[in-house]
Length: 343
Ligand SMILES: [Zn+2]
Ligand SMILES: [Zn+2]
Image (cartoon, rainbow, N blue to C red; front, top):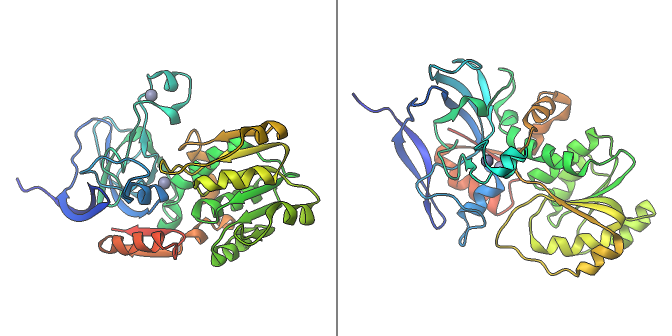
């Protein structure tokens, strides 16, 4: 019997990603679903994995990629909710269901989570194998470049449920990369109009305005607290860090109103920050954070499938799987906001 082979981008350790021919995964468990990948976007966390030293951990030998969409090709004998031909997106992190965090309902904090594209093979490949319970059907006519954003948007929705912004509030957002732009679009849908975006790349400030930001600032040049006072007559009720650089924490505290809420989104384990905890006390700030997805794929898909949301506007480049290294360079140089890889 000849083994079917496919092209895949395999993480080799210490910053190396290699394009290889590997066997197409086979159905082994009754709930296995083989997906023919049609698009997989490059995430900031893929860049963290490929950094030296890494900002996030992946197991060497693993196919990277966790933001993918595809068509069901084959199903195990126990699969009942999807069938061949269905278009699906996947919640990439497989949770155990029995650890103390899972039992408390904190599935996104599962101590035994196995993350697709980091600890098990992911979507930078022609095929990917997923358990049925991780899959969500999307409409057949939803464009691949839009559907590939289901996972990052689900992460954003998890953060939104945490910080729960109100329509009358003033929100400052740090970072106008893909996650920042998704936050702007979702904040607008929550009815928030007073949105200030802070970003050092001029082109991204234009993107933020286009996405719906009311004000844009360059924190390298602008004095944020006085600019906000001038524009709003007050500081921010809520702030979101969509950068994940330690220095952002230091910039956030001075722009907050008393009683304000701060949400940390980006995760980069190489980053540190120097803050004075007393400044948090003085303003009675609430610091909160969000990790991964939690009951948020449904809300994300309902936004994705609304053409008015124009979620795919955050995708700036599409590359073939053979050109994934060019896609990664485009993201690293920050020339691209979001790159979608097509196998
Ligand atoms: Zn991601
Ligand atoms: Zn668990």
